[in-house]
Length: 315
Ligand code: PMP
Image 1 (tube, helix red, strand yellow):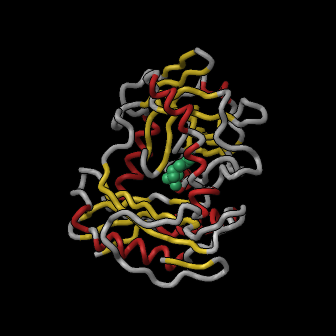
Image 2 (cartoon, protein in one colour):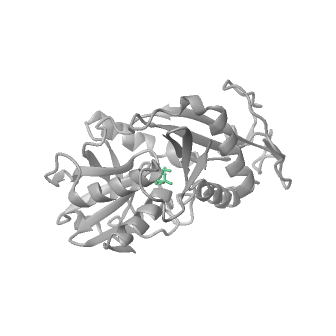
Image 3 (spheres, rainbow, N blue to C red):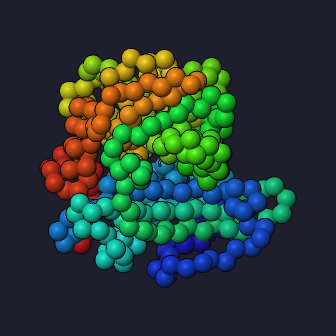
């Protein structure tokens, strides 16, 4: 779908996956005017289930406002996702074998030389079958806390899903992976002691019956899995706190886990901070992350009653 600055998107059309043509002076290539989303479709018998697609639409709209871009309406976004998934239904893996990852992308595709919002925008969606995100599968991941490089600053764009947020994490993430870690855990850049998030997922710390996660305050992506896990955890009788979580709290946590569309719920096996390694003594899920993973994934795959009304069934 295309749209001019200040205009609105008209209905798009299905096209075979392939390269797209852009001007060398497209806004997205020169000034980073780009946003994306990520959601998954699961196969259930003859139907396909989407998980809360309107939440992705709303997050893209908030991001578009921050990035001076027009965006599709919630209905346009959700309808386009449904149409794309149905056209690719044969690529949705069988139950238990993965999911179809859906990547909506919004970019300033119009040409612009001096710094300004692009005159034209393109919204597109592509899909790919996927398995587990981390090479560990659902085995515990090992994180390293980064205390020099930051992912987001107050007043910046850390709270929206803009493409540049992913370029800034590549350096620390590559260094971490080269040393054998699964990913990087970022701290706030002002006090350098409060947890923020991992390169592409949110973080939760468990102590007894209390599950804490960093509050959303502009430098953390408001994850849809995070929001869903908070509701699931409360419905399971846990106390959930959204607050400032200090890095030192990792030392005496019972369990730590990450959430995201790609990572679903991933247990953390160890965290290394300033050369010290804290291990949670797990060789699989901890009891709490296991319970939450089980409820969330059974809900997403249509294996339990969807009391929350979160899934959208396509046939
Ligand atoms: N934080 C970041 C930086 C992410 O890229 C993602 C993945 N979208 C998340 C958190 C988790 O968000 P969600 O649960 O909506 O996938």
